[in-house]
Length: 380
Image 1 (spheres, rainbow, N blue to C red):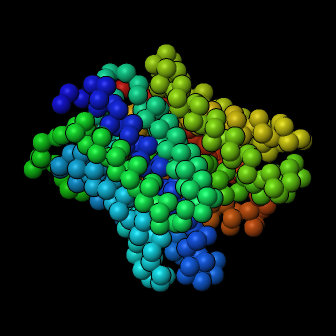
Image 2 (spheres, rainbow, N blue to C red):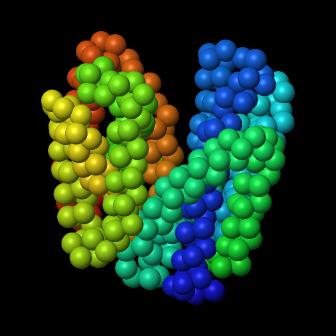
């Protein structure tokens, strides 16, 4: 199948949608799992960490596997894994078994995440025009849809198992629709099964980690930031992250057109500056409405940074594309996992607002490195 066909682009979008939908379906089930197992918050935290561990392990392995066999079988396997494991998460009755199931669920998500980005790089390269932001927007749409559908099904007292079976059926339909339209790369015996990130890929991965760290910090700490400053009540603490998410999704839907007009360098440079300005507004805002504007600026500014980084991973020549994409995805996810905890330790020492200023200092790397990252290269 040609890489540049509407059907192939649709399949890629469906892969991103399934990934966002699947992980969002699990979030409303967490209270049910805690009640069913009768565990405390500490044990629950360890169990939830299993998702991240499974994802990281799978991400490390997925790059070499995709480089050897292509991204299509990995996308299908990851999607089917989410389909099968989501209902199982509602049935297990011991912490050990739930931990194993969550590890497998995370592994399915991690392998799908890496493989769909590798596939997206190939599809975008064949189209010879920016598509990456639009693909990533479908992950956000899937997240909105998954959380909304699962919350609705649970609210009408359908039951956790029945709700997950319906959501799994929807994901299965999307996977089956996408499968014949995905690129079917011929198996190759050439190329390494492992390669350490090197050259420009190291910088791309570091910038991805910083960007994902900012997103993770907003998810876990922004509500506390704005409520502790007295800008909003505790009941409204989640409003800021909601606005950030909406702005990021909107920015990604328009990101391909913007990138096609101004290029990767300007998209990354001005996006980074806009995100930094958003944090500055948020941290200095005297009233709630101004702080909410900061969240919007951060979302719009950060929305297309990661898509640019993945695109550059596809154009660099330091290492195979699949391995480069895997390195960026893994370090980015590590930023989401480790970053919020790191923010907590820093906040304990210097205060939460100062910890966010420290994060702004890291984000300065994005516009500073924009020209270097997006320069045309042909290194071997």
